[in-house]
Amino acid sequence: MNYSIALIPGDGIGPEVIAPATGVLDTVGDRYGHVFNYIELEAGGCAIDSTGEPLPNETLETAKQCDALLLGAVGGTQWETLPGRLRPERALLGLRAGLGVFANLRPAKLLPQLRSACPIKDEVLLSGNREGKPEFDLLIVRELTGGLYFGKRGRNADGNAAFDTETYSWFEIERTLRVGYEAAEYRRKKLCLVDKANVLESSRLWREAAAVVAKDYPGIETSFLYIDNAAMQLIRNPGQFDVIVTSNLFGDILSDEASALTGSIGMLPSASLGSPHDPLAKNGRPMGMYEPIHGSAPDIAGKDIANPLGTILSAALMLRYSFGLEKEARAVEDAAAAALDAGLRTRDIASRGTAGVNENIVGTREMGEAVIKLLEQ
Ligand code: IPM
Ligand code: MG
Image (cartoon, rainbow, N blue to C red; front, side, top):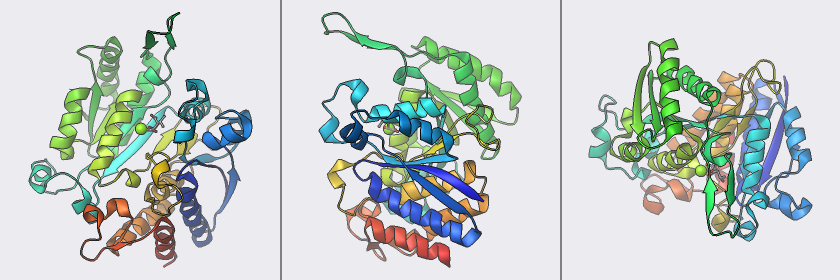
């Protein structure tokens, strides 16, 4: 099959992590007989420099025509002083809203190979309920096109007061919850709704919706946590979680925290999915946007030291969710794990920043090449 992929390398380390990911996809194509056509588009800081706006209309319109979108990262210090609507991050928000990708899946799993890069002590991890296994494996389902990120915001007349609003409709909540419940069906059948229902009215609506939606999934155990407690529980006992469903802002925060537990933010992929019923769906599959959860990391850009695995694993999620290529997705995930088994580490996932026993510190390119070679075997 032929697939068209909108490719937005973006800023900072974006282009460096996208290159190994397309190399991996091309190898998958050769091995399994698929053709991936990339349509490279500009968004973020580089688009501001060349067109004056973070998300040129052409980028969004072209992305809508493609089968999926793979994005590196956007942003950088040189654009930080621009007004809000002209900042690189606007491109992300515009893409998410424009493509209708309301459900952001952020799996966070502690790979046994990276146990020593996880900052939690063994005895704390072992206190979890994963049958004595130190690993945790959770999935954050973050609402992505509503809430505080998209609510009404502004300043008062003299500019010395500002507001942002959290608004959620039942419709937005319900469709996000359903993504969480569907995912839980294929996992350990537990779903935890994280909110601030002791204070926020919008959170109380989430709870009401969860009580109704839960009835359609009798095999799944539903629990509720306030965000402050959830942030603490995630460090005290990450093994207790299976699927976490939460709002846009809380999901943003919790997913960075979860990523640190996996050893490095450089490891985590994400998939942002729309509805299989909306007009942008392709062949009955929802529109999908795939990106590593790390940002543009301007401090390490251009040094060939960034971890490409978050982006490579995002490409694997694209194979799975947008193209239905489960076998190919697994092959990529297995090759990434095999590179770690072989002792390869980018700096961020090396034990305590220096190469541990049997560890070999490699750069971005070398890590990508190793994954490709393992895929070819
Ligand atoms: C993320 C990022 C973005 C977000 C920023 C860059 C706007 O932190 O994808 O988690 O807050 O959603
Ligand atoms: Mg974030």
